Image 1 (cartoon, rainbow, N blue to C red):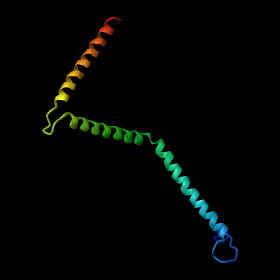
Image 2: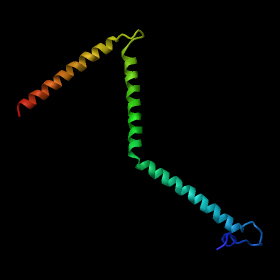
Image 3: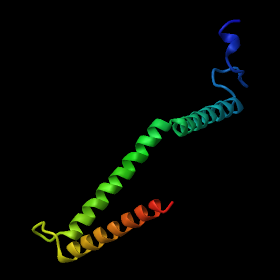
Image 4: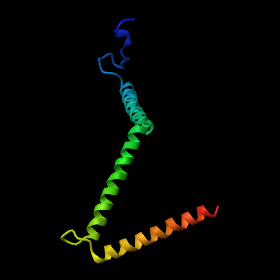
Length: 110
C-alpha cells in the first residue's frame, strides 16, 4: 500500500480534506485529549503513596497552624504564659490525673 492510498479522500481532488473528514479528525483529537485526561485522573487516584503524603502534609500544616495559634493565645507579648493559661493547665492536669486514677481503679476491679 502506498502513502498516497492512505491519505483521506477529498471532495474536489485537491490536497485539502473534505470538511466532514476534518471535523472527524478534530473530534478524534478531542476524544484522545479527553481520554488522556481521564487516564491521568485515574492514575492519580490510584497513586496511594502520593495521596497519603499529600494528606499527611495537609494534616501536619493544620496541626502546626493550630499549635501556633494556641501558643499565641496562651502567651502575652513577651512570651510569658497568661493567667488564664496557667489556670487552664492546672485544670487539664487535674482532669488527666482523675481519668488515669479512674482507669487504674477499673482495671484493678476486673
